[in-house]
Image (cartoon, rainbow, N blue to C red; front, top):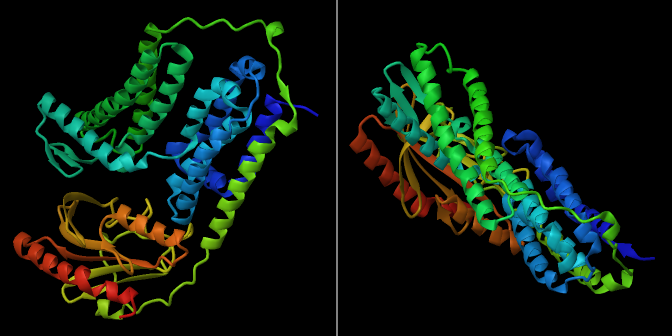
Length: 476
């Protein structure tokens, strides 16, 4: 029995799907629930089409396993373990999806894999990443909107993400950040550049263009929404209709992008006659070393992950002294889901919020993109000061109310408001097979008397986050 490129490709893909099924399934769930990443369902069919277009080169290339691919495979398996144990979804999913092209390279070798290079790179658009850019894109959108409004001569006042004009008040919400336009444009622009240009310089310039255009277009879109509402006395573009206008505008932007790109389009290269193509086959023995090395790496990675994934959980600390009076908080309350313990109340004059997590797994984790230090749907950030052990922010809402919040993440040895630092520490604990208990604590005061209240909350935060809280997780 001899194997050809197609059979090796199918077997390798099935092996990958079996080994990394949990990571693949978690990615598919994100595609399903998030409109930002729904395009993920289209990536595999597009990659199959791209490979089909180059199949005459693949099947005629000699098959010679590239054992050097075991080195990056080992590295990405390590990244996959780190992401999986540390609940860093983007790292886990990026590593899992990067491993498929690497496995194909290992089994087929350099010559047969080279024609699939772009398809392998385009495959990485399957990974749902990019939402970390949302706050920056909101700021950019607000900057563009204010710039164009002032250019039009409309009196404008901006505070945080709130923009006030004589006709009304607007907020640059998460949906207005343009992240969906940016990711979709980047994906489509990259595909268009590959299919329509043969020059690397043209391809790079068009991809950069596909990144810059949606950012500018989203700023113009936001400005247009405000202008429609302003000129119609707030009758239009203040509800769901402004989202419809946004997608119509994005369709126009894509048409403009492709129309401009078509100006410099290169001729399509001719494909060789199918009768000239010779299919290469190899015996299974040729793949023995590559398959053996891969099986050893997968066995070590999966075995280590299973062994480190079940640490002994500590007893839940008693946080009673932190809250002298339990009571519900206002609508500024932080958003932390699936905590083992949520407590709200008063500590002297301060509002207190506490979310405790005994472990760090896919069902409940302290650091998560859905968690927020305040209710971002009703409040917007004005100022932020970061200190060694805590962060102090000032927020306001559409009613003009202001509030100070001091918060931090607390582990047994680390107290920090920097979520990345805490996530990395918990990941290190997970890799070493240690429990990752941690707690988020926030204290708050109204920002009525700016000077006194700000100093008061800073003094309490220095004491609370500097010495008091770590003792709870250490049994003191």
